Length: 115
Image 1: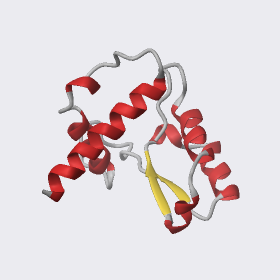
Image 2: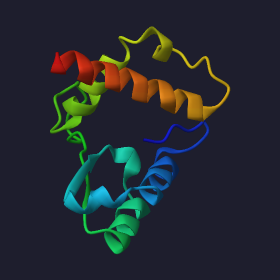
Image 3: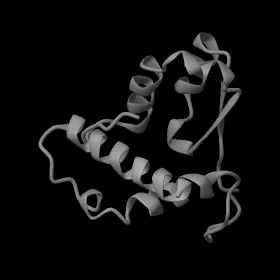
Image 4: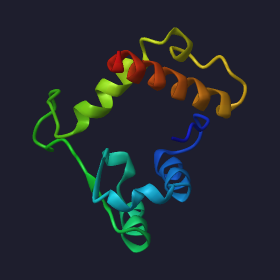
């Protein structure tokens, strides 16, 4: 996970994240991404990694809200994180602290499921 300042574009943040992937990424085959991650990032990932980025786009002919494949997983995770008051707004000066609070919140969710 990487937390960046708001001025960093999604594609640049994705590159930061992918540069710091641990060795466990070898099991990845496909990552579904939003349209903001398309373009040169998809080619860059294809050249450097064994997995691929699959861009999930809403059909052009529709303007209404619709359920897109795999997008619900991300929305659900953000919904879980929003239950943590500390993550509702960024109160920290350093992005490292925001990352730590996300890890704490996700650990808490996982511990609740184990008990």
